[in-house]
Length: 246
Image (cartoon, rainbow, N blue to C red):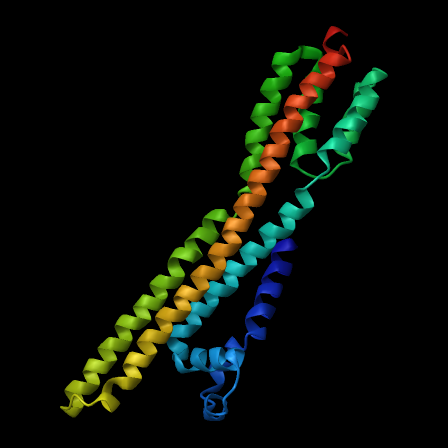
């Protein structure tokens, strides 16, 4: 469900930028009216030739969909570890390991899941707890990083598609020179303009997705650090409350 919502949001963002108007053809009034940066950007997108720019647009939509889905998921996965550990400590002080497990089960996020797995192994001693935490922590980290490979792929593909449009545009320009037999600027200007615009927008898409990618990675690092700190603190809390001696 989150992926569907993310795709719809990404589609809406792309439509807001007016990119889908490229299928409607050129609007010469827009470029000549002394408009602002938004309209100028939209007009350049249209001028870049929909056959090339549509591929860049699809890359932007898919990349944004994965980015939005990851950001929503990571925000939902963020938990107050101090409060969680405090609630666990209160239950363990009364010897209520099951109550501590229920606290983890009712708390969303990977940190609570990892601590729950550690509490499940309480009867087997601290080594078993640490082993369970490490093993399940790796599983949770893999879930947090889900989708990053696709975002990286779109970051790499976007400028490549732009460069492909550049090469094709230059080929068209030379074809016109060959057909006309003249090297005047007016003959090759159209092809060169398409070539440059596809490159620019391919790079813009890659930059946008790279910014989101770095934010997501930093968010994951923050969650993992809190998860590791909470895991270490859990073992200390269990030892302080003599859980391993029961």
